[in-house]
Image 1 (cartoon, rainbow, N blue to C red):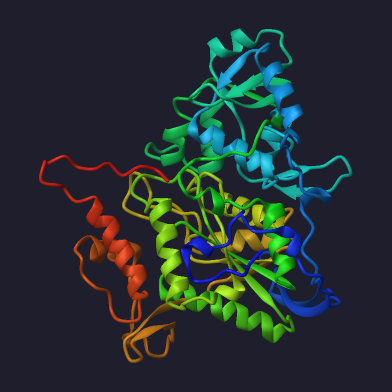
Image 2: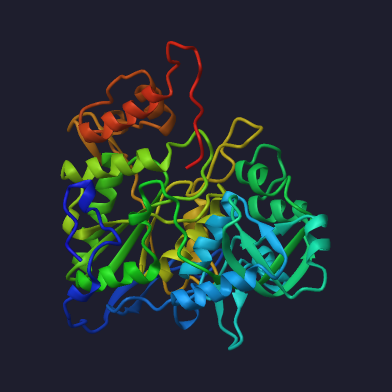
Length: 469
């Protein structure tokens, strides 16, 4: 697999040859200071934690990949699917099949049965047969309605089909149980206020039953949007990290364009890891590629913007892997950020960068943020099943007017710093105004301006509709 260059066509893709992977020797483990909370009312202490330089093991001891192997077996499964009840999947359902099929949710082997659903809702974790606990904070479930439940009858298997009736998967050893939507929404978001984007899209009008079982996915999920080559599975990412000789992988989850403040945080993180004694830390820049709310910048435009960030040298292509994370977005704050972190463990990351209000949103009714801005990083440091993952909280970055660039905030001279919010950034781009020099690379800013320009009212007076990524 050739190293990533600054050309979009040479971004890390699935077309490379894994047989060119060179051998490398893993360094021994090293001890680094690690802060641990001792609980409410106690001071934080520094303990020595052993960090292995090998890639972190997937949850449950290994990746659970649910793709049917071999074309003959796939044809057999397609024929079997014609003889059993069929359930049509929504776009978000297909995205969850994608997530499950590649092992992002390991050790899950399919859509959740009731015991897994209840553990997720109430404990944000799953207890495995050996007594160990893995994190699982968002339900990965499939809803069906009364008519579909009646159609399934006594069958212990169903075929899952997409909007064009192509067979996507077979769900076996099924279990059907009640879909308590109010409880699900309340426990996932901490509110049942109207206007939660994912709830409105995928829960409120969904069926009153959930169906779980073991999943066999007929073929890799493809979207045909020109971006499939960037949707690398956890196994493919692990291969790439090994090929690059990474002795640490630090992941950065995002659903917005990258500005120079983000880049500063990422480059500073690599510097800190080098100071710890790692020789080749690699950044996983991992934009979310599933469902997002309609006013977010769509995935295709975000990928163009990320290309320019690399092209302009803001991030080093030799130490940065850019790929797409296929999960839908809940905007569920501290609950959802655990899912984002857990999934990156399965992709091989042993460090996770977390910032202000991760996975958060504005309150859908009141004029305030839905979540406390600091709770996400605090929850990650205590979350069950995430003890193996090293959490790296953001330093606060802002535009330093004295230096003309993004820098870490210095509280001794607050008058020198300008905080440019996401709302302010979008307003500037919509108005085709330029931010202060040094806020974002010029090429990346032009992509953002072009996106909002594409939404402008054309001469025929018809307003283009923003669509979820």
